[in-house]
Amino acid sequence: MISDTIAAIATAVGEASISVIRVSGPEAVQEVDAIFKGRIPLQQADSHTVHYGFITDLATGEKVEEVLVTIMRAPRSFTMEDVVEISSHGGVVAVRRVMDMLLQQKIRIAEPGEFTKRAFLNGRIDLSQAEGVIDLIRSKSDRAFTVALKQVEGKLSRQIKPLQQTLIETLAHIEVNIDYPEHDVESFTSELIKDKSTEVIQAIDELLRTANEGKILREGITTAIVGRPNAGKSSLLNALAQDNRAIVTDIPGTTRDVIEEFVSINNIPLKLLDTAGIRETMDVVEKIGVERSRSAVNEADLLLLVLNSSEPLNVDELELLEQIRDRQVIVIMNKIDLPRQLDMDQLLQYVQEESIVPMSIVNEEGIDRLEQAISSLFFGGKLEAADMTYVSNVRHIGLLKQARQSLVDAYEAADQLIPIDMIQIDVRLAWEQLGEIIGDSAPDSLIDQIFSQFCLGK
Image (cartoon, rainbow, N blue to C red):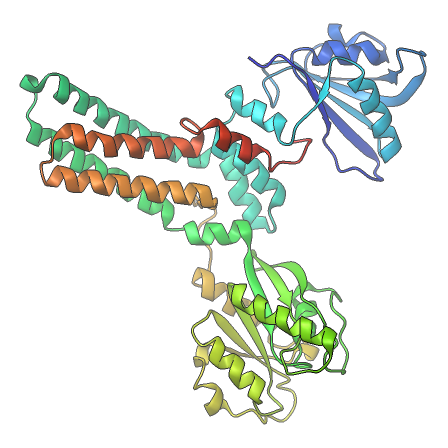
């Protein structure tokens, strides 16, 4: 049982109209009431009511801050504990003064993610829903937000729990066979294991079908914009970001380092890396930038190779084309508003024609075609239906694959009529691996590691 009371700032620290401080625990109402002066004592207030008043310094009686206090009594709160939310004026000083008064009471500052962890430990949400909270906060597109919201609402949990139930019923049947062999036929139990394993494997396969897309929606596609100097890489970054994020000049070598920017293309989040132009150079600073560009090329999921169609391919570009021959790449034929000098037959020796997108970035021509090419490359041109369950978390994907393999092993063992008590091990392992997704069988160390990634106020 959780016996202490915690507090943390729930809003970003800085200048704002209001800031919110959250307090949760068995003594939340009592401890805040001790330093609050309003029309009625908070301990007499009904749940889910808002009260105007002042936070005061008990030692001096001084009014520290004018606030609105919201009371949410257990179990009707996010943590299923008594929760008090204090809305103060925004700004660093106002928040600090209120926090100082709270920490003089029997209240300690919360650890990262401790509010959500308490919601999990108190049974309000499971582990996959808790992980959905952090995905919700970090989402970089509308679709990523929708996927995370459905996970918070328990959509993935509702699909995992029936699979666990199927496996636990199968394990119960196996136990009966082991304990009372005279009442069962082992071959019948083997057939049951094969049928149930196949049923759960098919359900796992359906969840994994969109795992790659889900991972992309959650984490984004690391996309490196590469090419020689002055080909239009920074102009492309600015066009996709719809902002003057990178400096654009006619002077080759303007970009000296890798510039990062997150954009959303057809609801697909892209982590764009504008790289220094790849060429041989004696400039020490530019040379470092070129090396970083080569590293970005190696680490990227997608490459946008920008070529100047008004000039022939040079040695550096041919070397780069050879290097990325087997990578996910879209070739942008920029400056199509100028007479073409680039040899298409030479280019087609390295890339497929369908991966080439003609553009005039300066005239904003071809942006739509590029966005469609990116979408087609990763999602076949469209996302699944809005109600589709996208498994986006790497941990969940790994556990689903492990559970699937455990069930494949159980099926093959049953098919070979291996003793039932041996097959039971694989079935139980699959049940535990599915349980680890929603937290039924997750070790404490994993739970601590997951919640340590949250911000303090969440």
